[in-house]
Image 1 (tube, rainbow, N blue to C red):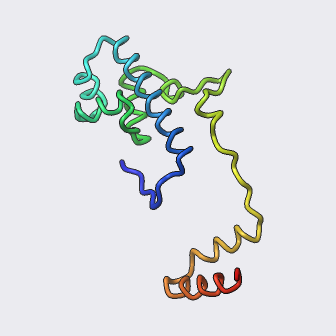
Image 2 (image 1 turned 90 degrees about the vertical axis):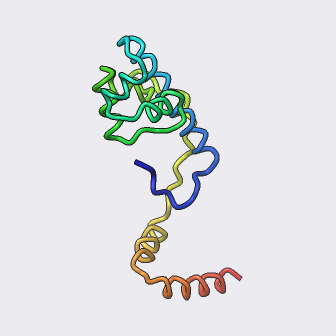
Length: 134
């Protein structure tokens, strides 16, 4: 299932996502080879087209959560292993997460209020905000 992202991720997030996709693909490939399956056989067990399964193994796409679960079951590999997670260490791509900025309470409250405005109201508010910042 495709992500419904409206804006592209920042470059650091994209690099992290790419590293995760490559790590997941490598883990899936290793598990498939251990099981003695071809890509076509693994794809059939997971319920995917062969080409889609191949893209996952090459790190060209991330599976949806339900597909990740089916991969885990079909390849007999824990999902945390597919995601390169372990209990004793955090992988390098997780360490590279950008620090989460805490927004002040007033800003969070304003953001919640903005969600309820119509497009016309947002346009007027934008004009006001622009005037205030001058």
